[in-house]
Length: 350
Image 1 (cartoon, rainbow, N blue to C red):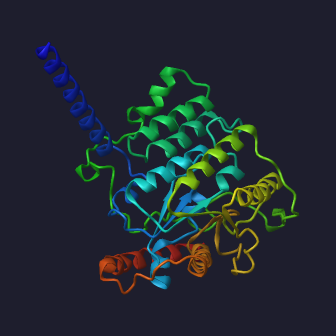
Image 2 (cartoon, rainbow, N blue to C red):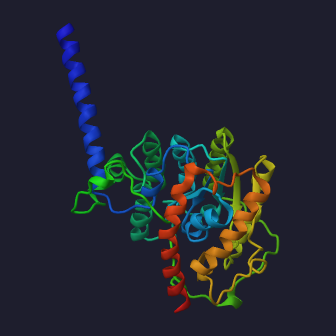
Image 3 (cartoon, rainbow, N blue to C red):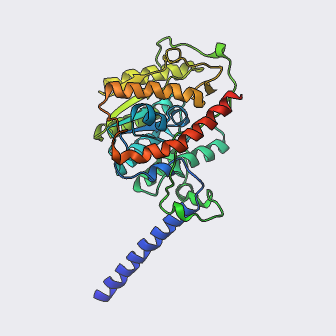
């Protein structure tokens, strides 16, 4: 009996070691992902985290918030983050960070970001699912998220395995030992530059104003919103749900924003609505946008100032600029400043 148990233990330990090696090998052959920089952060080194999509990472510049306000922040974002990904993002953040404040962008709900969106074609399913999964480390939460995505796609068990072991599709031909833990330093701290007018063309006269109407979420969206709020209530961090100062073209999206604003507030959470602030912050559609709801570097500076001032006015976020523990941020800013100048020169040339 002892021999059998010893052999069984050997098999179990061997399997765990094998899977650990395989997991880290998959990290080393991943393309650069948006979350590499987050996983490179020192433990408990961030006071503010922004969570969302490309709307978020194109709008808030953590390094500018550092320079002007001493805020230590990070953008935990993926392209087209799914609605049901948001609560797993919160769980992922609290594994290594204890931020005073987490700002959650509600635009995934405005645009129906989920794997079963019937307006997307198969190529979008592949691309957007990759964005939601390939950045993340292999955790139990990732199992659950893949299950939900596969359910939205009405997939089989085989489809589930296809998505969970996504490295079979998403990889490079080169091994980078720097990525052994799915991490790489990111001077942008999650900010993602989008160049001026690089997105869909739009005319200012096609944009709409808020008439106050509400559009309720679908049953599926409401279910995942409530799941998100349950997770938010469990967090030690202050959680603020917010709408960035974006323009709108779709009345239903505006209606969903108004519904979310009231519903989330009724559940006892803070909802910060900046959707009417475009003129207040001097946002200029001719110079400051990638598309009607995304920003170039010129516009992102204005939005960063707005959000930073909101944070400083409403939350006890320390100014770390004179804290020796964060001297590395000043060193990083030198490199960031060169990037910012490059970004803005590109925008001014278009």
